[in-house]
Image (cartoon, rainbow, N blue to C red; front, side):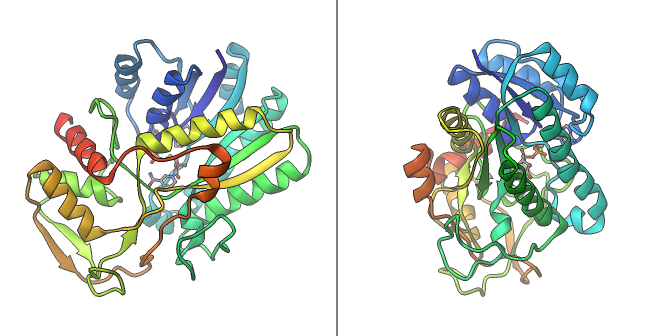
Length: 335
Ligand SMILES: NC(=O)c1ccc[n+]([C@@H]2O[C@H](COP(=O)([O-])OP(=O)(O)OC[C@H]3O[C@@H](n4cnc5c(N)ncnc54)[C@H](O)[C@@H]3O)[C@@H](O)[C@H]2O)c1
């Protein structure tokens, strides 16, 4: 069984990817400092996959921890999720974001070279496109100046990977540009665990439905979209997890010094109001929400062109928006 290190594997996307890796016959090894997750995720993972997943609590910026993992396990690849991701906080604490998000990638790449580990999948984001001039966005749509230090860390990390692979390190690397991950494992045992006030729409929706938040505010209903609210491409986290498995399997068959980027979305845009409506309909709950003013810096509309990942990696989403809303609510209820 091929062993894959998942940095940030106790987090939202990493934990679901651990499940999909086991399902595909890989053996995941999790490294997480639990700065934005909880150790009990590992117990939940064990319940889902029926076996213990090796777990190291530590910082991906710490080469000694990585070396320990590398000595304990013969790794064939790495998926690098570990990063801070709160856009708002990154504008207040930019150095924290640059240090963690960029620093951890550098330490990881040096480790991979030391241990001759070839394959890396990196978590990038559609944030690199900013508000694109044309929709849907393809991988060759020009990246825009980042709206936040967080967004910039993703751009800089992509650039580092391009330069690194050009230097012929004998590695194969894919950056996946995620659109908006939503949903949870259908078992309801793992899902998104926001600490404090959620930054993303769907956890805010589920927490409002659960009575944890009093009211949901929709930021603007007068944009140039079907119903005036912003448009995003919401991708079920299990589909996103599967994209990592497809990316790793694809890398195994590439020549070394390969680098490419892929969008991971559904190819469809949905408005914020559609999300609310679908959530209410699927789950038979009513949501206390109000329309508020536009939020400065919000991208109005973005969705992915997914032809490249469909054709090259053979990846297609299987879950619907209804599935996402049902699974998100199921997870919130279990919480
Ligand atoms: N969720 C999204 O909307 C979204 C969208 C695009 C890209 N991404 C990217 O995907 C990745 C995973 O996101 P997520 O939503 O699962 O976030 P998350 O916060 O749930 O998971 C990240 C995990 O990394 C851990 N971590 C952070 N810094 C670490 C470090 N230095 N060493 C070890 N562990 C560390 C955290 O404790 C957490 O468990 C991130 O790189 C994020 O920027 C997320």
